[in-house]
Image 1 (cartoon, rainbow over the protein chains, first blue to last red):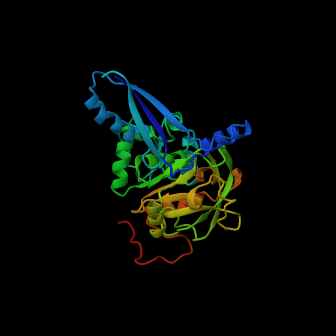
Image 2 (cartoon, chains in turn purple, brown):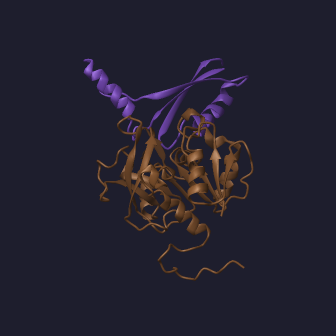
Image 3 (cartoon, one colour):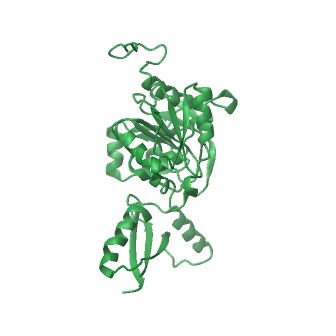
Length: 82
Length: 247
């Protein structure tokens, strides 16, 4: 099974990199963009995991390692597999 | 007393710190390899600056899984003195031994410059050789030094006197301009509630000799030595009980 984990800053945390990207977009004339939040993408290959196992495993890995829960939140989805 | 400096792959202030402790402060100092399990009987563990594990994932995020860090964690839980400098501070945050987290500097620049920090609490094992309000001139060199903690945690830090250093100007004024990396409340260094763990972004080892342009960083090492050798700062009366001589 292949899963994708998206890690980004919590809404309450300032994201200077996202703001800089937004400013660049405004400079280029994309005035419609009102907010940019930057994050990280992880793709994990899980051997022999069922959906149920993944539902326990992936959030645990995200909380313990991939994200720092003090400043970051995460989302995840199954890309391939049951 | 004996110091130990932990070396991770990517540490780059390990030898500077070792030199400051052994040759400048004249105390026995050993290097501790991150893959070992032995703290070699040291009285104080120092996590030096650098880019452990290339800052992959997040600064300090991987170093916390090093075998030796399990020993360091147990050492700190027993009350052992633990000092984290720059990347060492980031590791302490990732380990959960200190509260909060580091964000990228507000201006998105790697900052390498001398700054002034004010001693907010001189009643710690890391600052007892200093005066409250004393201004130290010490260099910083970091990309992720923008200290963040949720409001409740910040309140606790302030209430318990855990904010030990704040960025300030040369006269000791805590101003937004002096807050070069954007840290909440100008925070440059904090200690844990028990008082035996301290992390700071500035590099005291790079300000420990006149040759380096400042000797202010020595205050922190002197404080640790005073604490661990149970002595009082020179010219100051002993607080409370007189220290007993070793028998």
